[in-house]
Image (tube, helix red, strand yellow):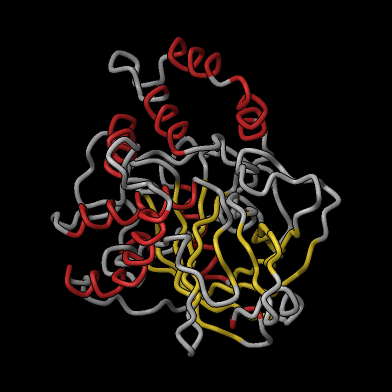
Length: 364
């Protein structure tokens, strides 16, 4: 399958145009919530903690640094239209630009089955009511608050002598945050699929769907793969095997996911992303995501986009989850920093995209 032609890298001014609206929205939420008060943890503090864990990687995103651009469309089926007036949930098709990535700030990290994978999406209906998502393949967020996220990053920073987190620091973090033990165990023990194409990606944070009559409903959602899920398999000889695999897959045929919306039940913790919701909550199949093309971030369409989860259309609003404004602020700060740095060649190059490996030993 042919991919889109590579276009020249976006200039910093063009990037600023892309993020101007979400930046203003993020600042509004942060100021209203007291996030920018001098005694509070700031977006710079969050990024400093990420730097402690991954070092300074100039020219790259400060988190989810290793990635690749994808594009296609989302086709709403109208099933969730009673809960939300969002354009993309109506019975229509809208274009999508997205990104697959691995969590962490290392742009050349070695792929491995247990590393957290992410899907980021920008859904662009013609009325301008776009929707951006940053969703991950873990069942819950491992912390409840920005301060806990900051502290976890410091606890998990690699020891210079071993290159791995210091077990003593991690034990101290767990001892000081015993209420997070269940969430961390759920992340560690999650089922692992074979790659990006057969993985499930979850919003983790909760949002409010707003109906045409103003009724608000707390929801989370997940992108659930259409293709069968295969177990993970190690590819020790190929440090980029997850990305080579998804390149092969998308060259061969479109990749699809169902957007499954979960409606909060009476006992669900809407504002705590570290707690899983009840298994018998109401679920709605809201539409189908189809991805058809893939490009390197070296000039690809996702390169200048911040996938800020607070860029929401009419018909959707943030919940009271404190992680949401923190994520938004960190995304804006990360963009500001990298837009002033020299662009660096990514691990997934245009040459890798143009020449699929043809290796289908994962048999998806």
